[in-house]
Image (cartoon, rainbow over all chains, first blue to last red; front, side, top):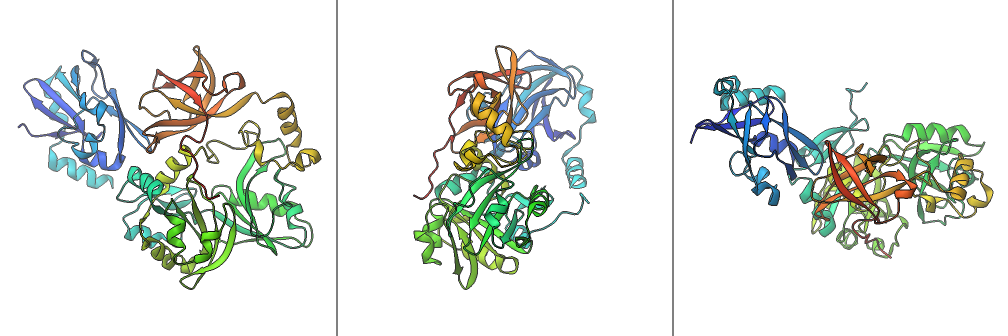
Length: 125
Length: 365
């Protein structure tokens, strides 16, 4: 399995071929608390890097989820509609949000590896 | 000033329990513990949860005529309150807004007040400004206040303080818990049976540990307190009521004493009377959105594409297992069942006006 890359908006990206799977990090789900609802983008939507494309709601608050890279949404995780708590239980696996077919694969170079992301998280606290 | 947060006497205990501390009304308070808001909410409705509400203002009004003095600032009938009884009321402004909501108890020789943390300074200044000679206000900043809420709260607490079992809803009792002097009222902010316990700050941690050691007891934070009170249809000052909302608009007319409605001598009486006679332009209502997405405070409420109001509190109700909200709507849209739209992130979510509480109250009789 390809290794994960991370954004400063606390999203993870896993590239397979030209399609990136995107979710929120374990750190992000811990900070959010119990996820009760996720609003996901429709397949076919073209998104720009940094564009708000999904919303994750905990009991306490709503948070935007941004497209870490530009491209076209190919699929959203239908399982989250029935069980949003997957985001808490399996943030970096079954709790994925959506898949993007990349417009420009080199955009991934701007993301962090796991170690750099951990350093970034530590610097924020 | 904003960077110096106050702490309650239970701050060390919150940290020990893994509380996630956040700023609230100038205090560092636990929004949740490791269990999380959802679990803490459900534990309250199922068992007994301990909330630190020591940030709230506690004060005593002493002297002959204290009740009459307080009535200069509230439409509540304070003079009718018997010793050992507490009631919920509103402090009003001269223009008919709400200065604060509060609890007042008759302790026999004095009145005991519980005020919102964010409003206690404003309230006390307003009260002091109207006190006649012989009546004095004494703030009690060194006291802590613990809320112990849920169906198991009173049965558990009664093993330590037997007298609490017979305390009626809104009854007040001075007693001891493991030798600690406490002032217990059978009331709360969750819709469940339970108590609020006033205690000297230096004994608060020992009391809190004794309560947490009781069967089915656990700690809960401000996050669960908010979702519990919203499911119970209870107002949060600053969200659902403020200096612009009147008691009539807020659907809190029941807090206005009968006698006070013949005297009309409280601040803002003119506006309240006019709204009672002709109906207010807007009303606070409960709202149930369709689906699972919560509509938060400041969400625009629309009908047929026109804005008719605004959400003032909204969350996902863990016991309801769905979203719930309250807000103000134009009176013609305020009837239960009225179909409305909540404009959440550019999408219109269908919703209906619904009676509150969303989860029935289970207060002691």
